[in-house]
Image 1 (cartoon, one colour):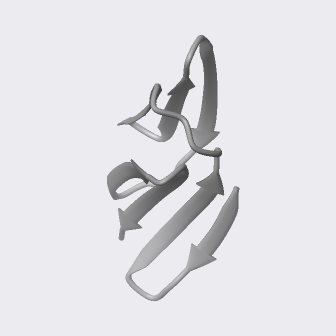
Image 2 (cartoon, helix red, strand yellow):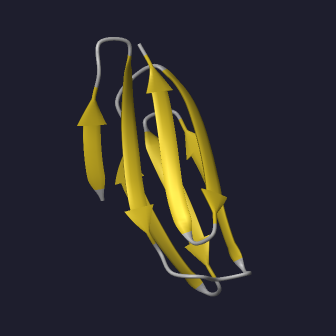
Length: 64
């Protein structure tokens, strides 16, 4: 996962490959990515987080 820090937000990006069975959710300070039967967890900075997957790219935007 790659992290980009800006003045007003942090952006986390990961390439999970094209998968139609992938989903993501952010709970408190943890992002949970489910790909088929596998689950991965990532720490997320504190703030208002939005997460999405498009074309196999996971993006988590956290406003501070």
